[in-house]
Length: 144
Image (cartoon, rainbow, N blue to C red; front, side, top):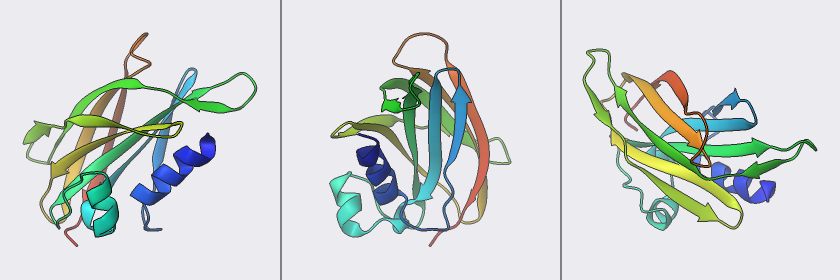
């Protein structure tokens, strides 16, 4: 189960230069990363229906329930959010759920300009119930 999730994240974030981040929210851990779509092979991009070009990137978000025994279980979530640049120009990002075996994660594509610093605000409600948690982070993306 955990192996399937890790494989999914590895395939979508292949380059070693990328660094996934995470946030802990009570019984849940949320893993997230912004990735330039050109890091994907054409085959992987086609498999996940991700547009592959120098000015398209995507967010990959996975939510794990932290079990009492120390294990984790992938869970569904309600996810919404968007991005904005330093001029406060922004747009929403539409997320879609992807399931592979027991792995569950969410992909949201967006366009960007070369060397643009982007600010992300993403709301995550694990299992579609309980409190909504906000992920906020900045990253700089480069057209490859």
